[in-house]
Image (cartoon, rainbow, N blue to C red; front, side, top):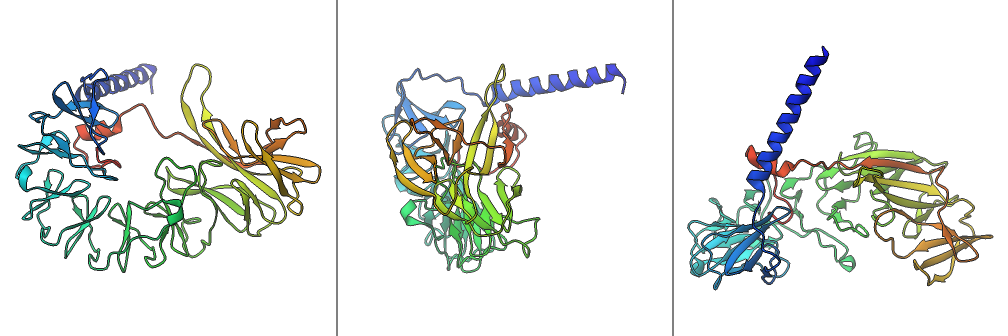
Length: 421
């Protein structure tokens, strides 16, 4: 291709990106500045009042005026643990910033998470659920509701679901990690209303992820592991997959780590696939010593996670690394905890022969989070070598383009985010 053609296409591409960016900013950015004078409502994370007006806070976008709302009588319809984005005043019922046609405040009953009824009809936000039976319609939890015939996820009927045999998903009540996006009937399991193929509903159990602030969704049905609605397979072969879980711990490894035989994997949640970290020299089962510290009877291993920050003129998070490494000098036969370290950071001291190791109680934010470090005689703490580590770097998949706004411009169908905002 001639050079001038290359320049032409580069210039046209830049013009397109700049034009698109201008459209996104002008179309989806709020110019409202409340100057910090906003007053929040109880249980609501989206509606505020300021200077005699009601505003709706669209996530990561700004404040939008709720036109016509009477600030003296307006109140969000949220209750405790409710993620709805609806409200009402003496005259109208609102979904986000818009009036819901056909609903009168005096006769509206809020069921939870944007489900509303007037005992004749049922709405999800401003959408009439035409097939819903108002007499039997019940809010289940999160964005799930049901009537005598159908299970609903938000405004959508979950096709094939048996509304008469719905059961909660099993979870570890001691961890208080109640699943809010999963539901099961006698025959199937669903995630956000989507069928999870090959899942066994009777044994399907929601798994706890340590130090998780990102609502990471893993589950196990006694035979296979799942991430959201995706089954986790080796080489996409269900018959050859017999994975064992090593750890789901964002404190000492960003990704979930699994193993099968000698192979150790982590799960790429962006691409929805297992990634081989490496192979160890035996196939014995692992057992946990501490968070991020394991043994297979032959070696002591520690896992670690790196938050990979860009340096120099480029700023921001480039991605994450998850790894597992043999702790040099550690013998599982005599590796044991000998006491607590009360310095900074606090943690547990382990001993193996003449070697001492440190396990941090709190991982902290950013940087590297190894399960073990070297503990020197003078109390200093140093990193163990990672030369033989099995690890993988995953580049951050986010970009500067507001794809959510872009999909709105072209009226693309997209699932609502967690708060349906």
